Amino acid sequence: MSANSTAGRMNEQSRLLSDARRRRACSLSGLLSLGVLLGLLLLSSACTATTVLQAGFNSDSVNSPPSPNQTVGTVSVSSGTVVVAAPTPTLPSNKWVRLTKTDKFGNPSSIRGNFSGPHGLGNYTLEASLFIPSKTGDVSTGAVSLEFDSLNLGPNPLGFMHIDFMPEGDVRIDDDEKQRFGHYPRDQPFAVTVNLVITDAKAVAHIQLFGTGASGTFDATVNPDFLGIARNFGAVTFFMGTPWQGAFFVDDIIVTRKG
Image (cartoon, rainbow, N blue to C red):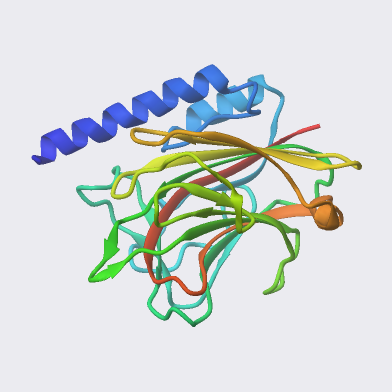
């Protein structure tokens, strides 16, 4: 595929994702993001949502860890395995963060986005862009995980729900084989949104996949045993854990809140 056709594919995908999120913006309390941050801010404002986390990496140095201080909130990363990546022919022109895990039994390779402060109960929407290669060198890329955590700036926040982007190309909730759905593509970018409504009585997540080759929606109820942690929702973590190896990319991590 030529460079021009690759760029055309990326531009078309960005347009389609932008159109899709505009149609769903207010119902999702925000927009999808593949680099269109101005549109996100405008539509989020129209939907009376407050941005509690906005992390992007275009101002960061390539091959260095991302800056802890973000537009809204902060990020923290695992040491030595998380760096800013330059644009490539297979990635859109903005910078991404690359997470690499070479030891299947080692500590997870992770990036955590910490909210600007405690916000408690409410209607939250996470939006993020992902790129998961089929292989990293000779190693098949394992599962990529997204975890929803309490607000804790220490090394071990408490999680109350997580999503696994499985090697088979579908998505699994909380390690439950009965909660698998949808399809996402490898070797091209796609986007995920999670609308998470947390009340005193329960917490429910509506998950959607967007982009060329991505499809599927799923509603999941947070385990009641973890509701107390969910009421202190304050961070999201992307990581690759045991027993997986490989690398993946993430960009434009944004969380908005209504209520």
